[in-house]
Length: 608
Image (cartoon, rainbow, N blue to C red; front, side):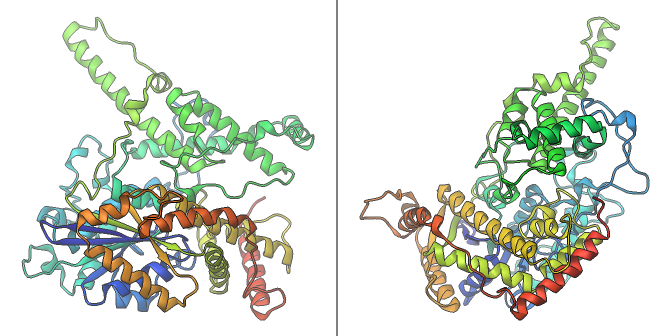
């Protein structure tokens, strides 16, 4: 949880996070509801997948009844992006030409802004928090609510030089309208009442709940300084990446055969990229958890060649980009594309600035003493780290005068917690995760590299449904998929624990796994409520003590962190065990039948 309190204005706001993406709704929201008893409070979702409409089971959204008991915000605010398809002519397939202009298929529109990112969420979260705590100014509430037709938006005036900035984005306006509808309904007021200042409204306690680490980091510590990419840069970066990934079309049969022979001989070192980890910049949910030791097949070879070519080319843009590429984890095409978006945006701004200066010199010196025009690649190679990333964060709630108190719900028994994670994965399959994934795919709402497609659960389900040589009743393939899904979820839960142990703003709250659900909720809620009542100085004392072995005076949070870290040494002995999807059980046979139907549906659209 993060609890935000502005003592000067008597504003409160909480955040809650848990150690498994599949348990956010079950634990966090229920603890939030329990904490709200006797007070006014709303939940603000900090889940990167729950924001999408129609993405329900895999996101493990709260139920209708749960949202009736306690209002929830930032859930179902955007539509999943549609599948992106491009038409690239032969002359445009040269991935080495970053100055090339790519053509787009006329009947298929690419919508780079359709993905909901951390910047979008942070902006929306701050807006909702401001509305609930009555700290938004009138113009902040009224600016986005203007007509989509006239698109007269006053907010974010600092972006005036960018004609394609966020404030002119039709999708952002529609999203704000959806957010306002939920606010109005939860507050029990009409639109006119909501749009104007109203001293009679009472402040409401926002509790930000979720496990998307980057979202919480931005809200608590501020947004990193990377430039906001333009739509043109996003489009060019996406097309460039597509060019790299289509490399198989440029390989001759001899080159492909030679690559296959090299891999079969064990000489595949050049076909893989060493995994790196930048814990400050990477959201572990986007990391590739499927590093296989199996023999590399033809598709794997092509993918590896494409990745090697792409990273080599991006690294050649200059030292800044080389260092960033080295920090990517696995074949993270999404992060590579984001890196190019920033690169192209900065290069375009510098290029425009250079052109503007040359025009001034032309007017002053009559065509004399002009600087030579530089190519995009030349500009990129001359960029320094400070021109792109200064390491300074801004826009945090702390900067806005809030007393931010953050809580991490930490299971006191990691073995029991992993068993719970496995059981929840099975329950999601019983609820229809494969059916939902198939429907999203066939309707074009799972484009490659989109936020939803990369999310744990959907990623493994789609890989299973699109597998080669699929056959009906393949129990081995199905159980392998279930294992992959559960393993990826446990790995993410582990990453969450590691991430938040390093964050000094988060107090660790022990959750007694041996107790029943209601008792666990009651115990954790009472601890959080007590810690929220502490004066700020005493709360900081709770956070300041280091969790070092042998310290007999550790307070609750520090001791919980230490216990959690020490238990990690025993987790290598964890053995996953099926609880409901036991082979030959009615539940197993039912989900297997559904899996076959969904596989047939998806594969009818696949081209291998």
